Image (tube, rainbow, N blue to C red; front, side, top):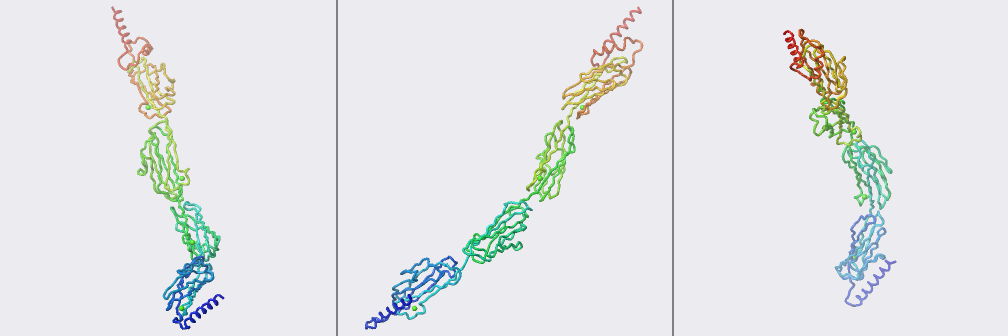
Length: 558
Ligand SMILES: [Ca+2]
Ligand SMILES: [Ca+2]
Ligand SMILES: [Ca+2]
Ligand SMILES: [Ca+2]
């Protein structure tokens, strides 16, 4: 109906103009070759996207044109958005762009922006120009341009791992989530997730489609708008350090948002190995001055090889380092035993020789092992041995006699002194003091303990560091000769110096003088008891008595 009325109007106008011309006036029927051209900026607009049509109306003359208009009705599938005209205005309802006058040689333009609401398929937009003048060339009065709609879908992938770090040999769980953000359904959806080196496929579960661990392709297929599909992949960690696992998603449609089409998850492979140390000593109760040997055994219980293995074992006070084997691996100053690499199941052994420099002391010696790798079992990384050095007491003995020369029948005193020079108390001290033949025991006295003349044992008992005890034995010389009296001290306590544990006293005993013998044998013993040790010379009192006897005899003879 509209078109018919337009044509009618056109004919009326032409009739009027020509009637005037043919009425004898000078004017003749005007001729104007109008043409229209149409272009579009995008022949394949995505659904929901705009396209921009440019319509150009031109008067090719030779006369000016009037009542010029272009009719351009948008086809179904294209929705009017806006328009801009160089002259006149466009009525999207009627599709008419009324230009009015268009001078010979002039052009006017109209831009129409329309949205693709159809999606797929061809949409042809036509334009037709007309004016009041006679148009000798109708072939250029129409123009059309077609657009073909396209679809797209914004696919997205996310990827997560249940643990950011995991021990080598253990599993991690990756979760992939594929999403179709639309605006329409997607097909031929595929996720590529080939596990990188350092991860070994164990198993997988997909909510949609299937996963091929050989190709790494998760074939989802059809994925509705706003729908999600998930894939769980269990993989074993094979190596240490960071391992990056990426996945990307593609589909049969264009994806206008590529930023969310790849996702990566990182897992850090952690090495672990169980190092252990044991420590032994060959003598846990040594004496002062002993050399003891520690044996350290380091072991790698696996499951991985160990690197940077060191053992710290500093000798405690009271133990002086002597040597180590292997010597180069042990630093006695720092106490560090450097092992370095230690393969699974391997052991390393170090021996340390140490001198015991303190007595009566409990010394704990600890070794601690460590390496570069994580050690899940710490209770075997330390081992200690306790060395308890025995008490030590340097017992010394000194022995003298009241005289170095004597006559048979004389009383001879033996003086025995024992001293504990420490450093500790001496327990159960005894002195073996057996009189040699030639002396007859008379009596004895001791500052501590008792002397048994039958056994010759002076049982002293305990002596503290620095304490002394004395024993005096009173004897009578009954035989002549060079008589040696030995004495030996001992105790249950270790004696670090055995050089001073024995002493002796020698007495030269002469035979009794027969002619002038006077006095009883016991006379001298009484005097000797009052005379302290006298190693040389003769007692003064017997000489005095002998002199008095000689003088007495001389007087009788007179
Ligand atoms: Ca024309
Ligand atoms: Ca995307
Ligand atoms: Ca360990
Ligand atoms: Ca001694």
